[in-house]
Length: 89
Image (cartoon, rainbow, N blue to C red; front, side, top):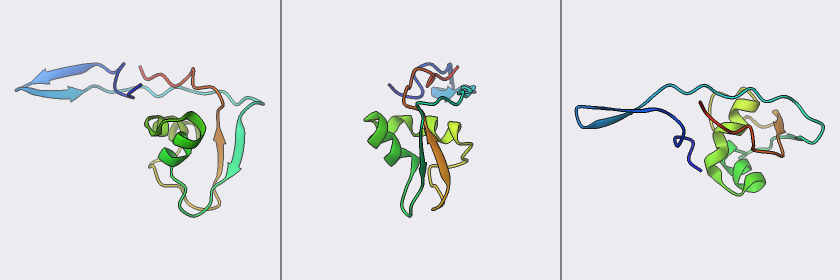
């Protein structure tokens, strides 16, 4: 599943433009995994480890209000077990 599959696309001058996406709000659940990041942790690597694909890096970043794929060591992170809310509109 690509994060761009559900986003509106526009064609202009033979170029495809990606529309604005609205990130999901994910409620905290008891089943979420909580962890403290270490040196070298990135959202794409955590997505690969927990979801089996690095394509869901944006979901981990969204849940934790991160601005980039890189994570500072010592940051507390929440990793939802379910990816059913990983849908962009």
